[in-house]
Length: 372
Image 1: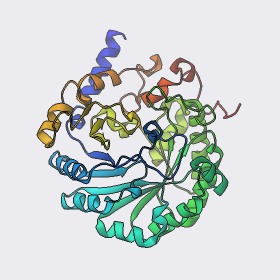
Image 2 (image 1 turned 45 degrees about the vertical axis):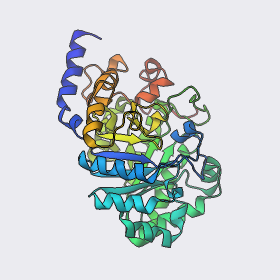
Image 3 (image 1 turned 180 degrees about the vertical axis):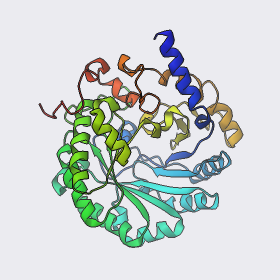
């Protein structure tokens, strides 16, 4: 890296330094057990093991995060609705002034009485995953027959008036259904239609399925095409941009950012230390994709209070130490001097565990057609 680029990276870090001093969101992986088997899920690295977080540990983490100033608690898995103490965890969060949110495959939310009880306990938001616009695609990707359950869950969220979004993970097996899904969900009255992309995970067994992952340039082409069509049809969606923004044509990207159809890289908490993930065994992760690859462990370090957590989190072995320094680097020379640098961060770093950045950055946004 040149001296000039080092200075630019340093300025980027200083610019966001304030954001790096406060945790806004925490994720509780209550259990890695799941009743779906989605191929791109980070939980595959856990083997979907049924070893739930002890309720007392979950309560302790909620209290600790409240003391640390966190505002949002996301309940994840595996599938969090399979956790038998879910209601108590939500109630605990509410008692500590934390907005408790659920990331779910939606199957148990198909029971409207169950969803109503979650809301009564204090649930503030539900993110419901759906893996295709048609039953065949969704069921194939989840290895279930759950499509109709998910549709009922979405309708139940709508009918009970709880805040919710839908989420599809774009991959090689469902990219052609991005537009049809948006049209279908729009017809149901869904206002918050979100898309993210399939990513590699870390670990020795994490080599992704070539039949599942799209490369970043292919993803950019899918996003660009979907935006132009959906905007023309008056359907609002949002894409989480975990690919380099320069892969999208500049004039289209500017319009997408202006219309709020795409997030820039600033939403990724690992670069600013604004989010933290807790595994059932006490592991502390910088991101959900780091399954079984902790920065440190609460139990092994005897951490029960926010002060002890802060000492580790902001220390050299935490996200604000060597980990953060390793993250803030240019994945490609094109990032140097790019006007989007600091917001776009050259794509999710997990992409470059599998894809060659030199090859990907040579592709122009919109020029790469999936399957060509």
